[in-house]
Picture 1 (cartoon, rainbow, N blue to C red):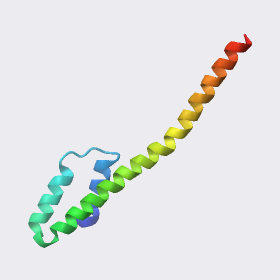
Picture 2 (picture 1 turned 90 degrees about the vertical axis):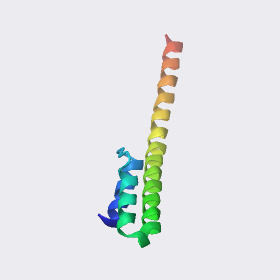
Picture 3 (picture 1 turned 60 degrees about the horizontal axis):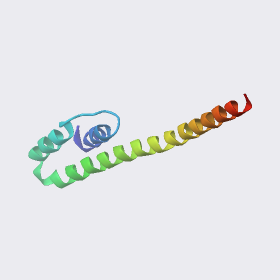
Picture 4 (picture 1 turned 90 degrees about the horizontal axis):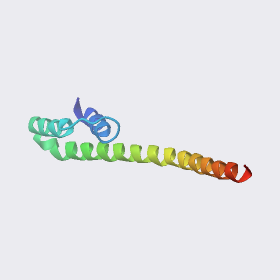
Length: 85
């Protein structure tokens, strides 16, 4: 799996798929096998987690604007329809 796999697991864990304890377990197991690379594994897991959180933030930010605008248009139409009747 290595570093790239750890990044993907951390990304998925922080964004679309919940993978409880898998990310932490991988960091521990990989660090036990290669103790000198432990800081690198921690950095990779952190970077994947931050990237996953940012991806969800961007998706929510882009998805929130159109739905708010649509709700506002619907409210305006409802008011306009009530006034014209």
